[in-house]
Image 1 (cartoon, rainbow, N blue to C red):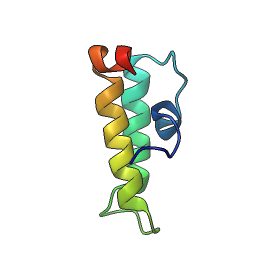
Image 2: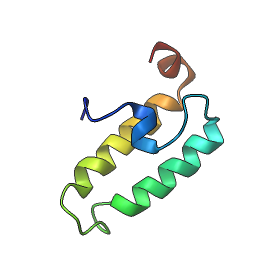
Image 3: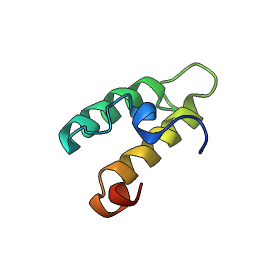
Image 4: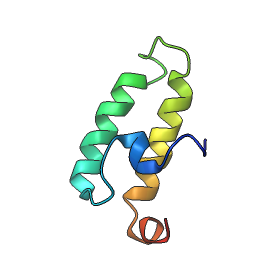
Length: 66
């Protein structure tokens, strides 16, 4: 899950992105690669990375540590 780009890169946002921008980006990325919709290989892995990035970047404490 780690080592495939920064959490910001996973969601395709800048490091100063607002929580709303992160949510919008997460919805877009997760819709593209949701395991039930994504037909390409690696869809499940990308979905899980996006979910992880969203959880970290929307929690002020975790984002501050990151």
